[in-house]
Amino acid sequence: MPELPEVETIKNDLEKKVLNRAFINVWSNTKKIIKKDFSNFKKIIKGKKINRIKRRGKNLIISLSDDYYLLIHFKMTGHFIYSSFKEIPKHTRVIFFLDNEKVLALSDVRKFAKINIFTKKELDLELSKLGPEPLTISFSEFKKRMPKKGKIKNILLKQEIITGIGNIYADEILWKCKIHPLTDISQIKDLNNLYKEMKNILKKAIKLRGSSISDYKDLQGEKGTFGDQRKVYRKENLPCPYCQNKIKRIKINNRSSCFCPSCQKI
DNA sequence: CGATTCCCCTGATAGC
DNA sequence: TGCTATCAGGGGAATC
Image (tube, rainbow, N blue to C red):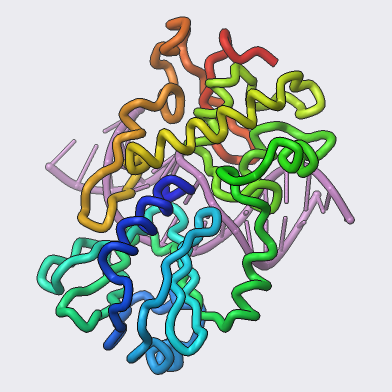
């Protein structure tokens, strides 16, 4: 699932491929992904030039000419493929046709992805709901934003507190810090270590071009390799890489959390 | 009003 | 083999 490192990888690759290109058309067979009437969306998109590519949390932002902004959230299984029209992958839901004979295709098995088109004002309002970026936040700001109480796993996943972390990286960060996912934040003694490992793990994942445990692929259809090095996420009953005890899976708010019950005590 | 549960969706996998 | 049931989960809506 595209979290911060995956979206950052998409952003970096897109900058090299589609900057200053223009959209000549757009097609979709799953119009609910586009959060605007499709014929209006098409009218706006046609002829717009791609000026900038940015990322905010798990969102990709494509700045267009005439002060329009595409806001894309890949949710669980969405990803972009940049290729010729003949090579579009399975489960393609939306195709952006570019002025260089190539397409940007959104593939998304589960159809959860969302694409919005905004003016600057609308975009800013939408983005203001998100917390700061984990890679640039200072420790004092991080500490300030943390609630006084609550389960740490839930806090890491809350996008309005810190934005960009999902289930994979939350589980990996907590394992590295030896913190049980149900630990109340008030009981965490070394917040600075949590802050540091959050950055370390996200940076390492970006270097490895993200995780492809689920459907994520990069623009070229290649997998990220962080998933091969993960320690606990979706590894129930496998040995903990540190102590060899069996990794356990519990449900927190209907989401699974994998952790080592021996290393990560509450 | 904050916390929890449901729902969207499809493919992979488990169990019989 | 082939059927059905379960699971994966981001985030918004509904509900407790």
